[in-house]
Length: 311
Image (cartoon, rainbow, N blue to C red):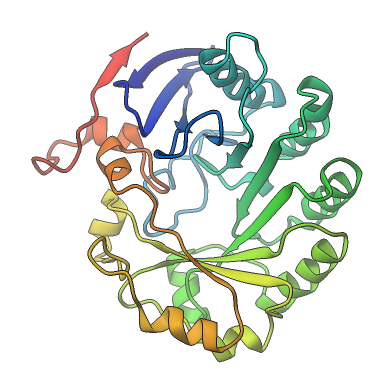
């Protein structure tokens, strides 16, 4: 695998595009997150699949699935970015976070588990935080059982597991994420086991469109606020979101939302995770996909500032 291009140098984030020997491509991201200095926190976001078979209605990476990455191909992304930023080959930062979240539902690829098992020996560091975001597809029980065992053996306090729900209404959730998935009850039961081993609360993520239903009582029926926290994020400006008429409830100008207050009143810890709006123009935010931008015949002027540089 080799890196063939990247977005132009940016103080916030950069997207890298790599190609394997048979021409399949992936994208991976580094995020600096100013004003936090890279010596304090550095985040990389890597791909686990070539595209994704889950056709979420607001994600540009879905619907163009071409197979699974090997453990070596996943490590390639990590190694490339570490060496790109740190010539010593050691992430010299107080917090090094890897999110398995750029392209692909990670629980559909058991090579992700191989990487998590091998990572501590390859990078014997104490500042690592792993983060896995999942819709918990049907048929992935073996993946999550092994993930639980890996967490117990290697990561203890330093692993974040996020269930991406997006709606508390089952019919709406199935439209947004149109594959068979774990029920809320099954997620909750597994989450209790995962949390009982110690570490961070599990995250329930909602990328909230204006029409998305988020009912605190429906969550309380399944998810204990002592075990789960809620993360609210925007629906980023993707082509899929535009095509499916999904407008973000969370906007740059607003800082207060009734739904956040309702969740807090229900006892949940709530993170309103807006991030850097400039990343939308770079194309590095969740759900965005440079390939879609590059192939689009009409991109609204001023929507994106990215330029690809061949490497």
